[in-house]
Image 1 (cartoon, one colour):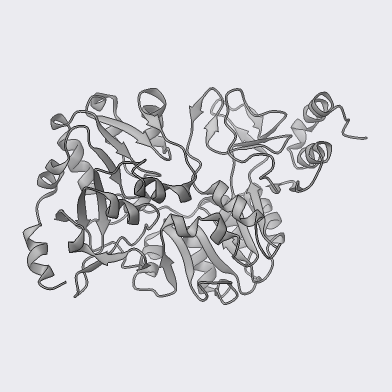
Image 2 (tube, rainbow, N blue to C red):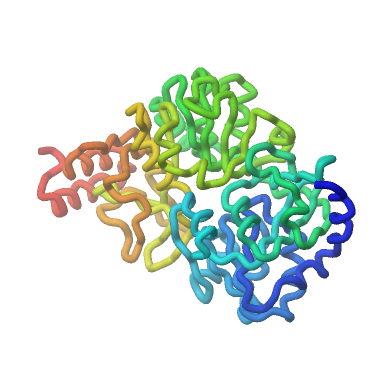
Length: 442
């Protein structure tokens, strides 16, 4: 764009000036995850007294979530697509939660079913042609920029210039530009204990050379990565790019050479991890950050060679129903995210070699010290199913692998009991007999 610098300068303003473009009753969307423009959000909260009923929507957040404080109930209405710790109380008490499969979100925006009046984004410094990158998130951010009536951009030198569909000419979209440099939030390396190590070993045993991986964040994905050192020619097509995948790339385990498409490139729709990871993504042609309606589309995933999808869960019942985003008692804990997208995509694999894996510890310990089994006869009262029993192929705990695909109710229950914590197996066996009219030993 000619003379983009003049236009850029004409749109520069302070964060407090920029957020005055937000009006009462607007639907405001934040860029996803570590891409959340922290200074713009702080300014919006500082300006709260000038708003009434501004709806705030985003997925996972690492910010403080001050707009969810009860003192701002009249100013901000949280309507989240994925719930984080700082937004949970507001969404369950006075706010709202909207559910969908992650890959559907850009289309919902295009159709206007999800309205975007204002989008707050964070981008890299412009290059010599005026192009910027949203760096750490493609997901819904790319479409939100296109759909929004007003785009407010925080330009931050610490945002990596990642490649993919996250690169665009800033002046074709931005209505306000705020230059504010600050480091992106980071996630420290997870602690891998004996339980996670065993789960990692079992998951790794299901991964063949040449497989394409989807991995998340946390101790279990990190434990899986730690067990893949001897694998060869792995690829990455994943909702998230984290440090574990970066390390496997450095070690030559992930080289993306046997992917069925996007060869030689790691594909993800957002990035979250350490500062080293963000620097790794900067101007790196081996990394491609794409929108979620590409990365998470089950019809794309099903065409990935030897697709392995590994996701966590809050619990699983003896039918194989998995709950990953709600607790009992109508409590929305997190969100569906891309779990079902990848579980289904892997199951639909055209090469017949895809595997959808639910990996979780066999037991959880509540705050009061009470131990509870994560494999239960039924899901908790008012707990919502994330993955139907028909979607669940493999469940992994530290006690082994339950292969459920094509199995009868009795066979599924028995396989799940075998990987439950030993302390809970007697009661699960009794429940199996009551529910399915088959004893464990038959």
